[in-house]
Length: 202
Image (cartoon, rainbow, N blue to C red; front, side, top):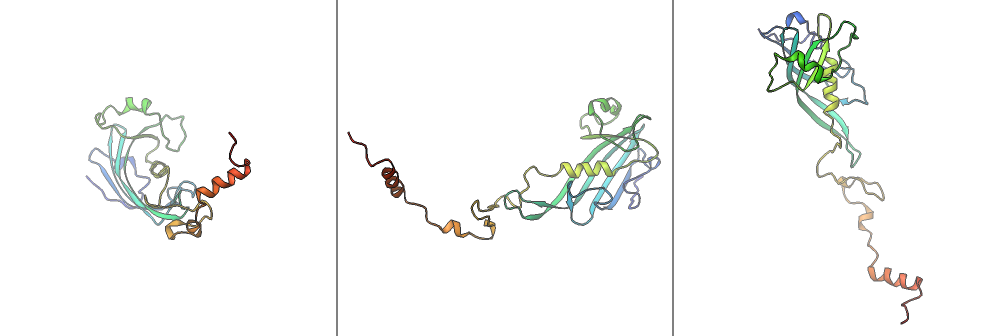
């Protein structure tokens, strides 16, 4: 049975997650995900749609997360809005009793043995552990958002960047530096000759 939920979106009860599945739909904020400005600057709430399925202690999570992140272009240093949309694929397995109460990433090689019943041909991208009677999805979603950040953020592929001499944003138009005429080659040659005493004698 599919259940739409907007409350308790980030902490669903394990008892509600069955083989029939549980659907979680709603919005979450950067504060709820404990995202810092160093992690990502989010504009407005993020829309989350997740499907959870539980089998013998294993919880498979799939879905989509969408929103807008404010990034800084590496070329022109201008802030721009970057649409955020990616698929979520994760699996949660019970963690040892001695582990901390916060869900954490685990070595996929160690967890793989506990995910035998999962789809072997299309294994979840990320695997986490849980304990208690509910899941904590915030750390997993936060990690997905951080990892979705591009290595070289660009406001556009055609970004012209800043002038290396005056620092003007060339996307806003040419600067005065570009209008300055270059020194003619023959003048450079003549200057070099004067410095070296003219042409060499045979």
